[in-house]
Image (tube, rainbow, N blue to C red; front, top):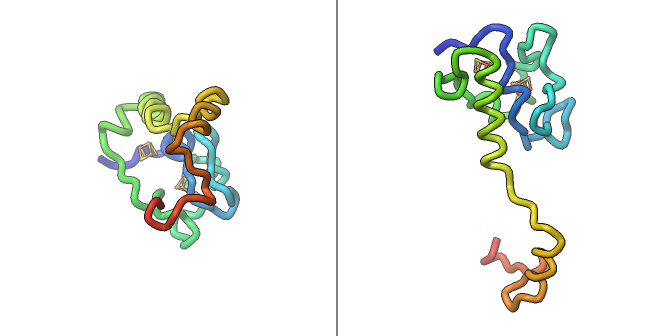
Length: 112
Ligand code: SF4
Ligand code: SF4
């Protein structure tokens, strides 16, 4: 399918971990990318600083749906389904007492 003019949902709903000129630490989910222009087009579309993940994203009906609202809903759901689970303080404490617990410093090259 062709990208829908004025949509921009894939530049708003998902988080993007790659650095960009105006988001040096990446973009959180649900936030307009600062590189979106007033027409919801990427202002750095042809620039080498555009993240590869953006360049590789292709419009498809199962992601983009039939409207911007549908695309926002689908992409937001995907974002929440793939969001890493943050351990609660209780879970973390339990893990620290586990014999398998490793700090970042104790991870060997084999572990990472
Ligand atoms: S969600 Fe799909 S239709 Fe909307 S801007 Fe992204 S690629 Fe284009
Ligand atoms: S850099 Fe461009 S393509 Fe990537 S999220 Fe921002 S506006 Fe969208």
